[in-house]
Image 1 (cartoon, rainbow, N blue to C red):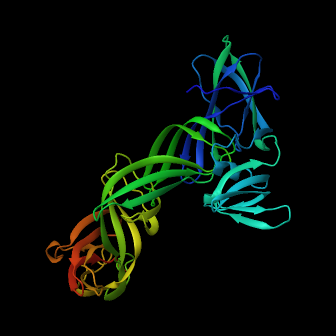
Image 2 (cartoon, one colour; image 1 turned 120 degrees about the horizontal axis):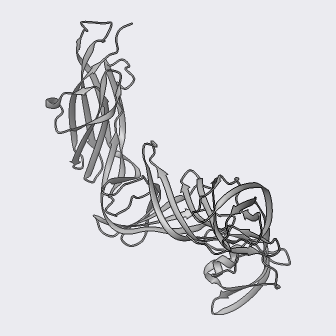
Image 3 (cartoon, rainbow, N blue to C red; image 1 turned 135 degrees about the horizontal axis):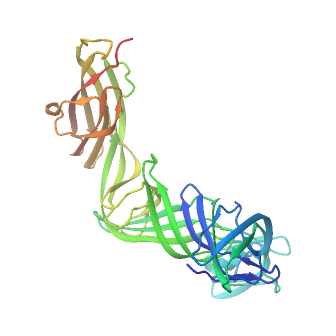
Length: 442
């Protein structure tokens, strides 16, 4: 990718702009900076506005790099460009002396003062010359201007200066440098609009915190790991513009998806650590959730989600897990105290090992799960029970048994899952049986 050449005449050196960013949700980032550089002298002096030193010069077919060195440097840049909106103007001039015009009924008034604070909604706290502080709601502000013309705000930026010797007869060459850096983690923000009892519209934006510089035409790759770090997912957003000193909000996806409201419960695995299995018990409540099927062509990143009903009124604020295409994501809403679960496991048979030095005793356990719906509404339930041991298929009822990849000693791992609908005031009892092998006796 060829990027526009930025030349700071006061320094007489080329500033390499950001052209590619591989950005992890942890905040780690791999960057590439490149530009067409005129071969006017040797060595070439280029500048990189990045906190970390460059890792390498990327090879190019049209020339050969003889040697290159770098050292820390600083330079002055404009903090912001001209504001495109009133909100952006107010954000840029916090601490500046301004005139603000605002509506009072059917009339207009104008106040002079220093912007001390800007709320997330855009409301302005203005300190007047008399030291009186006035709150101006953003919806009433019509215009704002500076008290006097002022030069653009500038600040000192840390970076690196590279000296590069290139073996070529070309009048210009593309110079590309790559390296690693650390930025504030990027995050996904979802808006879920419930349009019917079974359909919802999901809109996802990516928020990237303030960068040190303006960067246009950036090829952006976003990477996020699953919660257990077993897999990573990548989103490609070509040719993005990243603004300096303000939060960047980038569109990712928008689509209609089916959903179901249900109650979820995750039961404990009593035999996971090989503890005493003569009798164990647990008591808890189901969690109200939205089960969302991802029908989009891309994965949904993990992030906060704001849920609105069919009238556009807020329902809840929660979190959506990372959800690949065709998979189901769960959005927890609240604990439902009216749906109570009681689980008890007890040993019903024990067989001594014929060779205690290699295998321990094998026990058969019976699990009994009682569910009571004390709420006035019908509830759809999804119940999951991780299990260390071997389920007995003919004694699982209507539970679905799925093997898990990991093992615990001599025992396999399974996930039992029940799905049922429970009427108001109803009680259900579920049973399952499995076998557990103890480690050899010492």
